[in-house]
Image (tube, rainbow, N blue to C red; front, top):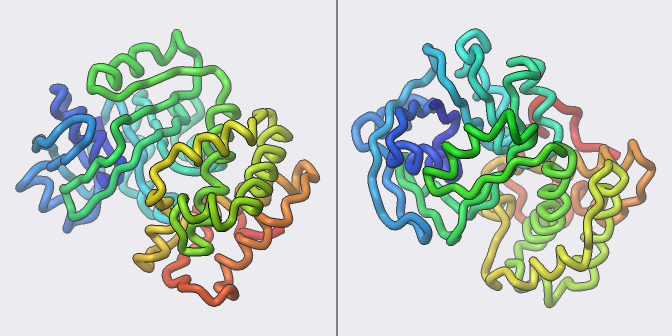
Length: 309
């Protein structure tokens, strides 16, 4: 198995798959590969406990694999894919676990439609240093989009490693189910620099309206969403929770603004759904004209047009 991007998500999956007895090859930059070759991956997890697992590490995949997990940030996708040549993938599965809804078509164009199995992951996990993973959530859940009879063996491999895995036919529902939930959380916490606890109290009306906008776009795309249920889930979050986009903004890293906010705006345009709050927040985050810190916005994303309405 190969893992492209052994960060918070990829590093956690590489660690648990290695611990389950699989041969795991992490594909990363030279600095990270040196650490992984020497020390393996150390995971400190609320779900899996603390352990260190050996992995192989390369800067470019040079041998066929049965499974390639794509776990880089969307902002790094185009460059990272150069580390996985199409001819090496062969007949293996390519499973992207990125935020957004537009990247599967990019991967199908590079590796072929048959190999690509879109997936979404629900987990809170952070790389604190190369090869060191802090897994804060008491769960790790993956949804795979495709025919259950075709993906049953793949799901079983992940389940045996401790990752709760479900298979569903409806790719649109899987991808939009996450984006409609993630976009309001990411845009509001990153824009205001507030935790979800502060957003749901200080910006409740704006949160509710943005959740309704995202649900309307999701429904127009063929994936009905329930705004009330989304708000219930936000209310159940620990008050100090931050989105990954907010953490990226605070650290001066590129934001996944195009993959999350940009995809939402483009879909709204296609279907004629008004999204005034989403438009304002995306524009403000893109330009920094709200006066808050916006270092490291970076490129608008791989394989898609820049954020625009």
